[in-house]
Length: 166
Length: 263
Image 1: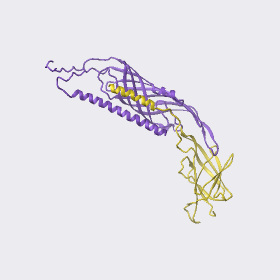
Image 2: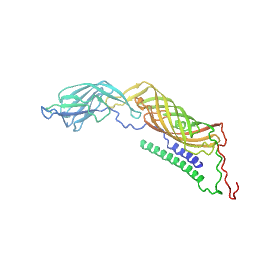
Image 3: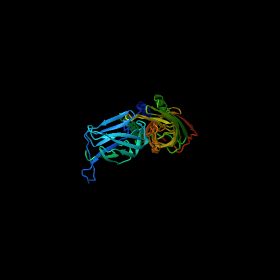
Image 4: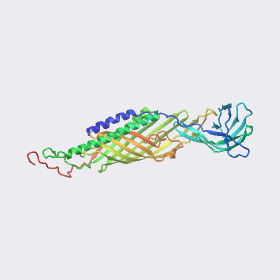
């Protein structure tokens, strides 16, 4: 019993020393909703299965209150943009090549959904897309593949059919 | 890195708790073996008179660990107390309670919580009791627990370097949390009717999904409210109240012949 007493009390000390003050942990999840886009085309006029279209230097430009903010991408068919968290709609400009003009305009209309991520990450906005409008300089057509836009980086929500003349 | 440190801490505690439990059993086994071997008449000493061990025993426990930790943290505070009562069959009925609060004051998230909690359950002793005055204890136990939590409005800022930041507030909320606990503990006498001891607790939230809209960073009595499992530690100062002790014999002491055959 004496041994039990000594060990029992002795064990309490290291446990107290091992305790640490709780601090904010690192945020390990994306804090911004990812709006993932794929650009495709049909290989023939009668084809029905789209093929990814690798664009040489696509440019997406956000029309913000502070002016246009351009994102120039390296050669790719897949792109990630974001929606405005301070409004229920936003406008993006798009062209297939940084050397090629004019830009297309894409307007997105959506509902914002406040989402608690964690105490480490705080809040973020997720979105539910209602509709969109496009112009047709570079874009032949476009389709919504998924309406829900979250911080899931693996889900593609929007499909742009590039104009056959490209 | 913090996660690794926490894992190391919990692993360390688990290993040493298991080691302590094994040591307790081994000590008991050795004592039992000493009682049942070497039975020549001239070496066997009379066993202690077996006495009624069902004296009433009520313990009042004050946790010292969480108040000390509260002094080192500006983010949370917690206070706990407990009472247990011996029920004769190596079982203790346990009631525990307490209160606490937390304060989140990050640049992008600010809110406060406070809660009361209660826990009920049993402890089962793992040690042989020598007599009715022996209340040293190594025990395991289980608890069913509940907390009543109040959260203030949560003010938040959504950081968006591209479109510009947004801010807002979510309304305050009252809600309940329920969890179960597995307990391992030690209690030893340091002077008459005064004990020191600790408990190590593994806790499992039962309704964590019900407050996923903003999981409180700390629930007094549980730990991190945004985790479905938590580990905790208490260091108790205990005062025991004993009454109606019955020292009646329930069996005569064995009469053993000495080395010259006298009885």
